[in-house]
Image (cartoon, one colour):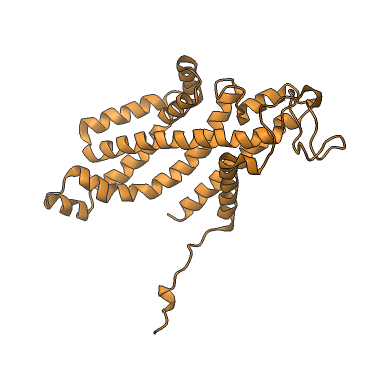
Length: 281
């Protein structure tokens, strides 16, 4: 049997070392979300006022039983960080899905149909861009309430414009290609052309946008939780933990530092993945 030539041998795609760091960070956060019991044996909601504001392992009075210490109610900070990862990832993934779906559909319609339809969709995008995203988020959440589903929907609705504009641009250039004209001449329906020929050209760009947008959604969720408009207690969220910890910063700085560092690391990991995807386009 003849040997495989070098150009036919299977090779794993080359991924930059910095991108691997982002992948590892994301995988760890996903494991936190899916299997919190592997990382902590404490209940995030259990209170012990006798152990409140206890320092972590780095302090002589701390212990490895509470590696990041406890908060003002004696709840284990590490357990709350782990559970907070679940909330952040669920909201980020859900918001990206909602924003990506709305933006992709409207972008495809706008770019492919053109004319008055294009003008209407782009003017709606311009109107939304005229408002500050965080102020828009606060205003809508304050009106409709702070359930998990509401937060995901509002974050998604406020973030669709970026997807729509990019998808529209790719669609406008792709629909002028010769193979698209050939497909039309063969009687292929518009919906099938969009699905088979235009959408595949959009997906690589969408992946990059989704990665960047996911990190932004984590920050948005943290901002809402910090302001008391995110997921409500006793469910922990990194933003609400940061808000609670600032009141005790002088005596228990770790209660604010831990969720702040968790937010930075999670956002950094996703951005590193986004940079890796962008460099491979």
